[in-house]
Image 1 (tube, rainbow, N blue to C red):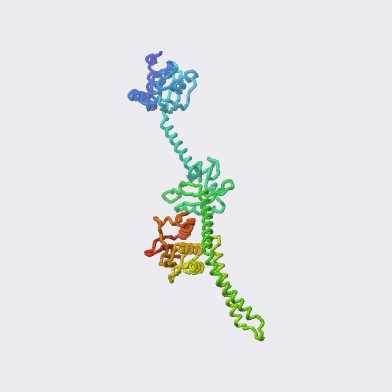
Image 2 (spheres, rainbow, N blue to C red):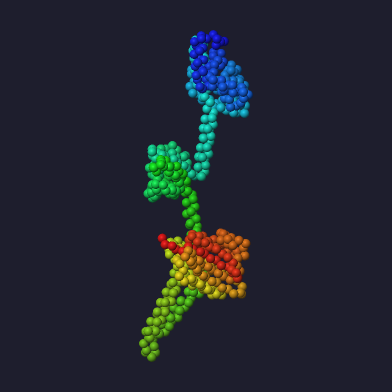
Length: 517
């Protein structure tokens, strides 16, 4: 083996100066494939390996150990993978072919438990007067690889989480008018991941009926207002609903620089809302029909009065118009009075039928300015007749000058009728039976109370009465009070129940006073 002392003095000094001036780990291998020289950085790492008794973190020390074992097919023997060491193979290939290696990335297993490091190898075969040598440089990129792997794992977790939650995210650069979308955002809008997008491309995907609204809200966001909206988009000819949130970053002068936001697919949620509204309409209709079934007998009694009066008046008119044996003319004035009574009773019957039809009507009504006293008076015939049949004294206490509320008259009347029917059913036996419907109000709220003298509440938690399918009746469905509660809450009010100091219970609903548009 040619020794360093055999080199000419000029060459030796040049090589020494060269290696001392290199700040990175570089090795010089001779023709015998042994390390002849190393830079101070390489020497420090090799020294660190010796001091730490072969710690796994001393990557370059392990590499030096491998280089010293190039002739051994087993490599350095430090791990079961040394026979396939990529560092060893790269160096041997250069000796065999003379071809340089440029920025070759390899993975090296440093310990039997599989601890890996990642290296970038650059090497070149030099033909010097003193023989063939290899100049070898290693760059440890293990930390960078770990960071990349961690970043990739984080991105994968984020992508999977966004897919599960159906939430995408995006970033917008105002200087270039470009947007960066996550894969889930692309999927929500039906675009191939990586497709170039900008605000105009996004706006094209928005439903035509919502574009002006979205653009207006975005302009407001650029002016500093919060951006949180729901709108429709068109994806492959299908309508989807999305919820968007965004924050806009500006410079010190308020000029928008960039924005970051999220987009969530809420199509399923919107469909559930639609189904819920439809189901509520069906329940309200069923509840009204059920209530009317219980009022059938009372309504028959109520309708019987005007019909019997009409029949009696018509029969009287027929007698007056019959030929008189004495040849006297019919009393026209009396006939006029009879006909007036017929018209009056006919209107009364027609009004009862109209109220029944309105009450049974399935369609929803728009909230209007409402006088609850008037609404109660309209349904009194329905309630009063039922009270007569059940031998219940009915008291009506309506507060004068009651402030107006805003709501659906039919729905609120339904609540009052249902509460009254519940009160009738609660009063059994031979004791005093009395039902009181009362209104009170102040500057902020109006209250309608239905008080009975029945058995009172026997359940441990009164709030259970308002839960769907909870019932204290043998044949009850448990939907009446639940529907009532949903109606009152939809009007911005509350429905409560409490036992009276005496016998019975009082149901009350409280609505806000109408304060103007």
